[in-house]
Each structure stands twice: as C-alpha cells, then as structure tokens.
Length: 210
Length: 229
Image (cartoon, helix red, strand yellow):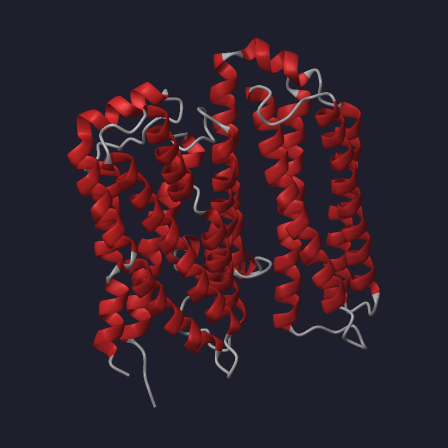
C-alpha cells in the first residue's frame, strides 16, 4: 500500500504498485482469523518464553527430565500433523478448483490424522502417569503437560473444525463454492495449519532441544 | 428503547473495575498478588496486620461484584440484536454465565471477610478461606469460558454484522481459550501457572481487564449508533 502511495509518476511503476496491492488482498480467510492466529501465537510465545526463563534457572533438572520424553512417539505425531496439514492444503486447493467430493474426503482424512495424534498422545500421557510422572512431578513435567495439553486442546478444537468442514463441503453437488463459503473453508483450514505449526515448535522445544 | 439506560449499564464496567481493583488488590495490599506458597502462620499474621484494610477492601469487592450483572446485561442486549429471531440462545448463555462471574467475585469477597471476621480464628482456617477466595477469583474460568465463547459465536454467526466488528468475535473465542489457564491454579504453590505467576495471574488479569475495556468501548459505540425503527 505504501509502495503505491510513494511510487513516482511513472505509469509502469504505478501499475506494479497496484498489482502488488492486489496480491496482498489475496490473503486467505478474513481479517479476524489472522487476529485470532496472532493472538494464539502470542500466547504460545509467552508460554515458550516462560519455559526458557524457568529452564535457564535449573538446566540440569530439565535436561534430565527431558530424557524421559519419547522421541519416537513425538516423531510419529509430527508425521501425522504434517500429513494432516497436507490433506487440509489439498482440500482447500480442491475446493478452489471446484473438484466435487474431494474437499470433504480430504478433510475426513485430515481429521483422522488428528484423531490418530490424539490417540498417541493418550498412550504417551498414560505411560508417563503409570511411571508416576504427572504435572506436579517437577517444573519440566509441569511445562511438558501444560504445553502439550494446551496444544491437545487446540487439536480437539481443530478436529471439530475439520469435521465441520468435511460436512460443510458435502452440500454442493457441482463442487462450486461461493466466495463467502471459500472464506469459511480457508479460515477453518488456517486454524489447523496453526495447530500443526505449534506442534512443530513444541516438538523441537521439548523433545529435541535437550 | 431508552438509550441512556443502556449507556449507564455499559458504563458500569468502570466502577466495577475500580471497585474490584481497589477492593480485592490495592486496599488489602494484595497487589502484586500474595504468594500461594505462604505458610498458615504468615497468612494469619498478614490478617493480623491488615485486618481493617482487608475488611474494607472486601466490602468494596462484594459491592462491585453486582455491577458485572449490569454490564453483562448491556452486552446481552447487543447480542440480542445480533442474534435476532425468537430464540436467542447464545444471548441466554452469555447472560446466565455472567451470574457465575458475579458469584465467584462476590463469594471470594465474603470468604476473605469471614477470614478477617474473628481475630481468634486459627491461622490454618484463615489460610483455607484465603485459598478458596484466590482460587475462585483468579481461577474464575468456567463462566468466563462459556460466556465469551457464546459472545464470540454470536458475533461470528449472527444475523447482523454492524453491531460489533467481526474480529471482536474471534478475539472473544481466543480469550475463552486463554481463560482456561485458570484451571491450573489449584495444582501449584508457585511458578508461572500459580495464582501469582506469569501466566496464572499476569496474563489472565491483563486479558480480563483488556477484554472489559474492549467490550465496553465497542458496546458504547454499538449503543450510540443503534437505530430503532
């Protein structure tokens, strides 16, 4: 926008500015969902900063506790998250192209990956609890349970959104969506990508950086 | 419709914030918040030293708690406009959940009043009452969660988009999720998620008062631009 405003009076440059602006307009979803995402990321940033601050106080305790985290299951969950995000991206693509039937199927697949993620998480939590490790064991496990638990809450909300979208996309016979319907689809899909993004950060933060 | 009544109701957010802020935090000397790691003897001594200030502050808290009903009713009327139709369920949910917020703030005040009531009360009992008050007041998440979720959904799915901006709907859903951190208070006597921690208190308090300011501002705007046929 500033580019168009400050562009010198040369027609070519001016047009370029307009094209640039038009491209910026093509932000998926609507403004509000980006505010929501920014808010969500800022909360997680605050959680991560708090984690780093407390970790710096007693790094040995954190490193020792982190040895107990199951990197294999974490890796499997990362793969499920990335796969589900791929399905969601394909579903949006299919919805934009008017490929009848595909968006709904792809959202189902993404939701199944999300459910798989949740099931693995239950096993992971179960293993911790059966070893007597809970959210009050020590500071590291406090962060482990609260950070992954907050993320799990997002996953559950996200699965709800994906199932809603799977149902939402079923209605159209010819696979064509109105711009308003596409915006709804994009908003829901964006949320799932954020859930995916947050897991990648969490996985690196808790499981990998020891 | 008497516009002035609606404006008076929505402006009750201001005395609410002042009474809660002064009454529960500043007058008893509980700002920054007291530590959940305090021993019973320390808690008892705190009441011994500040008995009258605590009693006065808690009286203001109890008085102020009722204003939340008034503020919420004014928001509910705007939700009623947005939702339309004969069955405004989200409005009902928001209004009834506001009762929960009033109750926790009011009871928190009464519990501390009780703790300060008899000077010969055992310190451990004083501590218990104080614990209930702080866990309730700072961790008042169930009603906040449900109320803001209903408000957010109402803005995003309602019939009218000209009452509140759409982004405010997303912001309410975001705050609903953030408020859930109140559920963690009961597990910790210190650290970031306890009732005086970075997340448990500072994030939650900033979001709570920030949410009030935003809802107050945009409700005033919605009431002023309200055209009744």
